Amino acid sequence: MHPDDWECFLHYLGCLLEDGSIWCDEAVNDPVHPPKFVSCKVSHLSDEQFDSQISIASTFIRKLQTDTVDNSIRCPYLATIEIERRRHLRGKGNDNDLMDGIVQYFC
Image (spheres, rainbow, N blue to C red):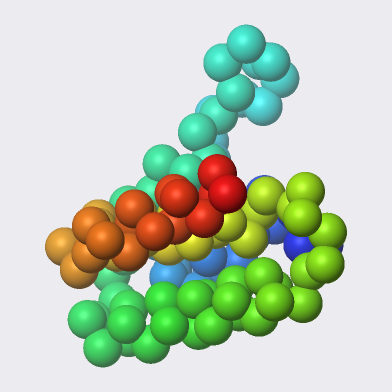
């Protein structure tokens, strides 16, 4: 995975969480209104499975952030925000973690 490949990360997270977000039945040929690949459903995983899978994704992203030397790479920081968004969708979000992710992105 290239560190700044956002679509690849979304596919990775969708597969981990088994939420169907990687499947999109909208047309991809409309550049003005592209399909919403991040419109995901709440995963059918149990709470324990969800926590385990989201932990795997978080660990992967932290490693990607430490291994990436190019400061212009945005995906790992966006990924942190997306992981927190998915936690919020599950009712497991932490507002402080979300804010930290947003601040890190802009720094």
